[in-house]
Every structure is written in structure tokens, then in C-alpha cells.
Length: 299
Image 1 (tube, rainbow, N blue to C red):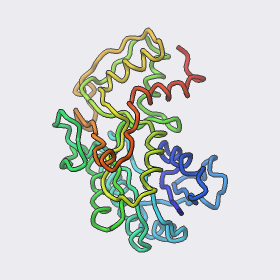
Image 2: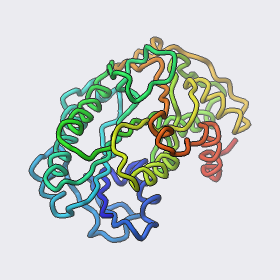
Image 3: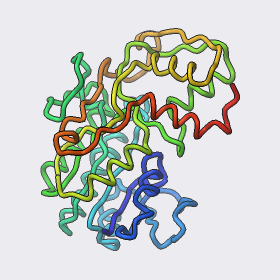
Image 4: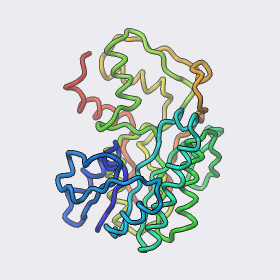
């Protein structure tokens, strides 16, 4: 299958390239704003495009004529999106629309990475795929806007909502905690935000399974279980054997520009009911991630 991955040099894009690149059945192409990443050995398989430009996006995707586009590229800094709503809308919503229009022209399938932040966070049980989104910040609204275009412009699409991504390619919440633990005996972490930490390595493997079947629709895909940011930090401290203290904070104390949902754990209902094996628990995934980073960690 000829597959185009947007945001291929990002955290999830990198692991998708690893998960899909070893298969002889896939011909991979990457797309991004910057230069060709070092792991894409054939530079002819790299497109340098601005997805916010409809014409160049259409022309670029036309050259590849993929059977599937996996769209991971997005503005994901939640506070930046809140402070720059027009740029967030242009990138996350209209950029997604530009890709869907190209897919529509060639009847290509599309897999769109969405977010737990499409939900308001008012529940106290995990969100299923059929729960009504009601985003409370600009990032969530613009990502939900991208979902709108897939639903209304394409017949063949996957919407994959995930959460709290961590992986080795980019800095993330877990790597930032590790860095803080190396430089301080006391760290302060939000305790009233609960979600589903998800290892991009596991998510990429799950996506590689999903695209083998034409089971289009909406999926929640995360590592199993949920925790607060504070509980996650405590777990990391234990795994590292650190003596640092973790002090709980409320979101209100941080005075951040964007609201976050208090509770956004995702239930992987559609994934499980279609016969796929649930991803491992987040604790196991975090443990493996920390082991893989061990050469750079000093207790």
C-alpha cells in the first residue's frame, strides 16, 4: 500500500515510519515543513509542504497519489493554540480540510489523529467513541473541526482519538518530569487532570494493524488505564528510584491560558469490539520507555 504520513518527523510520525517501514507491502512517503529527516533514506520519498496552502497541498499529494494518508501533523501546544486561535484553526482545521480534498479527488482513505481534548471532561467514567464531543479550549475545537471535514468529505476514513502521547522522538510530559527530577529535589505537578498516557510506539503498532482492514470509523486508541498527571509523576519517581518529592497542584494555580478537561480517559470500545487486542497498561508502557531512555538518565 502506498502511504503518505504527514508530520513524519514528529513523535508519532517517527514511530509510524518504524512500524510500517519494515513491511514489504507498504511504500512510505513523508510530508512536513522541514528538511528530510535522517531516518528517511530515500529523499525522493519526502515532500516539503505547507499544509495550510490548499493549492500546494493538493498538488503535492497528487504527485504521490497515495492509497492512504495518515495525518499526524498538527499544532499541539495547547496554550499556544489558545493564544493564537487563527493559526490553530488554519493549521489543525483547514490544513486537515486541504488534505481531505486531495484524498476525495483520488478516493484515497485517510486516518486522522485526533485528541481526548475534544471532550469537556465532565464525566467520571471513560469516554466512548459515541459520546458527544464538547471541547473547552481552542486546540480541542480545531481538532474537532478536522474531524468534521473527514466525516463530511470522505467515505473512507479512520478518526483515531488518542491522549497524552509520549515517545522517544520529541520532548513530552514524561521526559520533562525526568529532566526536573535530575535537577530538583521537589517538583510540582497538576493533580486534577486525569487522562490516558499513551506510548507512540504502541499507538503506531495499533495503527499498523487497523489499516490492514477496511473497518473505517471512529476509534479511541490509548494505553489502558488512567491516572492524574500527579500520579504519573509519582510512578516515574518510583521507577527511577528517585528521592525527589512530588507536590500536587491544581490547574487553577498554574494560571495557564487554556483550560484542560479534568477527566478525559478514553475507553477503547470500538477497537475491542472489532476483535483487536487492547494496548498494554500505561504503567508497563512508561516503564519500557524509561528503560529505553536509561542511558541518558542519572538517578
